[in-house]
Image (cartoon, rainbow, N blue to C red; front, side, top):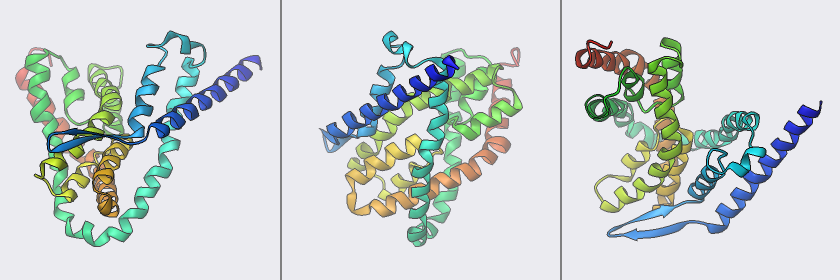
Length: 268
């Protein structure tokens, strides 16, 4: 009973910490840092993310008394619940923008092929530069979000080298991907190379946090296109979830396995 009460008190403290982080982040607000013809847009989500990392017990030992392993496990489960209203909001933006989505239909579908770019870019680095072993297969066959994680867990198990690879990229993407997705859209938009619709579709990579950071930056940069951005980004994210698993299962993972067997036949 005392253990349950202690855990309940720690969870309450966790909610208090989260509330304090949100208040501080919102108080700072949106900051624009001009860089040449473009500008980096810093959103409250970034500050909240940075503060969350700072109070990690592995970084700040003083928080270990409150943020115990059980509380951390509870916080991880709460992420899924917390992101649900956000995903539902994106669902409501798809309908009103259905004409624009249909018009961009081929591009939305074909962009899934772009996910194979992780193999082209990351495989040579992992194998030839970093000298990675079978971890390469799990690490580079996709951007390693939840569906990709589930695929590797089912096929190899997360305690395998492939599982270690996918978990490493998953954790890295969660920590760093949000920052990159919050900064890059406005920089690329400022170059005037890509249409805003293309940038909106690029936000939907199958990650709720990256989707939020990317669309938040774009809608701040182009506020008059907010509905279009949210609609295309939401549709892109849904399609990534729907098709990404099949692309990974039937194309990306077999291709990565074949490449690794060719590159490291003595280790596979």
